Image 1 (cartoon, rainbow, N blue to C red):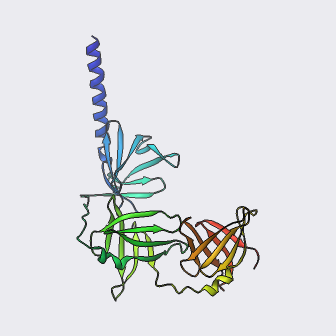
Image 2: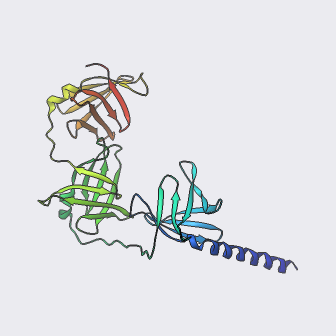
Image 3: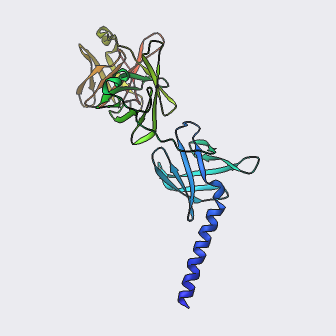
Length: 300
């Protein structure tokens, strides 16, 4: 009798899971991000949950049913679960999925994942891409592109992190080996010189030409600066022959910054950037430290 009951339970569980998969069959398929065409997720019914496979990094998100066509993730982002909701079009077919904080994703019909392949190249062919780039959408953001062995590397000046191992799929399109949807698409001018690249399909980085650093300008930046968030914190900038010296007035510690441009300075050892903020007339209003901390100039 116990064996019969056990088999019944197993059978009912299997039937229930099968029924759930059939119920969610309309939700299965590939959906594309509205912000980045390279970001595609595949939804699949698995047992009693819906699984989202993120094709750009092979991660999985396990989704539990909430109400109707809404689901909630087992995993958390910033300490909170992810809420998603599928939507039907006028014909009743599921055509979109709303993802919290990521907009409305659109179903891709007859989609076949693209397998990226590295084209043959040499380190010398990568040299034309190296240099300093500034973020078009936020002029306080700078990176350097360099060549490491036979790949491109991105050095983020705001935090010192390095994102490496980019290889070419074509003459002007690179992808990160470990994350193929992390793509860099470069543009050339009429003379064949690299002028910019777009990362993740949305961030535009402008290549900076050779910088005409003018040490005489450094004297204009001297003075005391006060933290906007904590007025008790002040720094002093001192002009030097090779850049600026930052003195933290709360502990008297000093360190040097080298100029990247005439208004952007950097300490590589500390991964410490400083950006001079000026008004429309060129007068110094303050400095931005570490990409986010604003200090207002309080005296000449």
